[in-house]
Image (cartoon, chains in turn yellow, orange):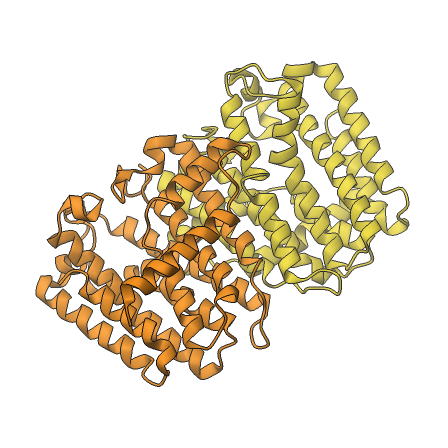
Length: 293
Length: 293
């Protein structure tokens, strides 16, 4: 399959849906809707929503049923970036090659824009349809737990608390599992749930997500060390300078590459029983691994 | 009816449920759960959740069905206070007589604690049961819209942008309607929805909420001018000093009092057709009006 074309089509569909779901820039108060859209339409890869759509496809579901959940996850991802970039958090001035939200709109509006993106995610999720196996309560709980204080926010807290300290491999794994892998796993699970996946399918998609999510973060850490600022669109080597917990810093570059390969292969194995409709998921796993070697 | 006893019983039930719904202080990462609980259990009056419970009662619903929605609204209310108090927003050092969340835990953790309280609200809402007339999608949308960028957050943005400027009566009403009245109205509507209220009941509860929500904020503004710091638990007169938009500043103290009385009477009229089960709602409206005259 042509993965580039696959990704481009889905990226456009997600962008188009997000544009429909979000209040327009001129809706009052315009400042907040400008700030939300500034960060949401900043050229993101839409990886998480595409994973939702691909998981739905792998389980025989309908694109339209997965789309609101896909978009909800992208809004949550963007909110977490807006808040992470704030001066009292990671203090980043650039993101995807552009000034961060608080550099453009100020800290107060950036906090509120993050809050509003998190909230609109749930408004968008309310467009989803429950299935025979999964109620709206199940879907709502799935999203709120992944974005909550024991997953996404737990990872961010552990990351904040690890700054400037020597971090063990286990602590690093905890950060990555919660800050990145949990949201990727839930993006995939929501796609499966929207497709009324059976228990075995959902279990396989969950294992795929855990391995892929960790692989993704290991690769992100490697990229930060090996690539230039221009290519990344954010300050390269910044994590090392800030003594942030990264895989290359903790286990070295070569061991990190081996770990990324191992995790990717383990992700692919988890969905070995799926038919051709899982080709996109398999391709995505390879694509993420290849993007920096 | 003995309103003090009524309020005390419900306040305890809400506190107890919140304690059950929230991760314990020692759940990892402990910092975030300590910060969430510090702000959530700071002696709040639990007005919004009590309104949810009272609206459910007025519509003949069950206490247990309204309780998760009541608690979800209190979490959202607390998150909004935590973020409002931040240095880049209202910059408040005290709230309910105690140092604010960011004074105790730092700005980074306070932002995350607010995020986590907003997120856990939706996790708690997932415990609610849909009724014949209201699906979980309806309930979810109701909460997300009230807390979103066209209501709660819109009010906060307008409030931020009004600071130091001369504000008209219409602009002030916009801030109050969105920042305060929308959340109070939705707290009441959720109670009615959990009770499977019919269209007429829901409409009456909505009108009650809009009038009561505005009355509440007018009275809050009056209190800020007329009461001492000790009694309020926050810095009295602070709104005037910061040239914040308040009713006494815009229309004067006596006209504000008349407006509060007018709104309270209009709230009571909206639910005139309800039977004795709405006694608590009627009592609450008077209680809010009386607390400062």
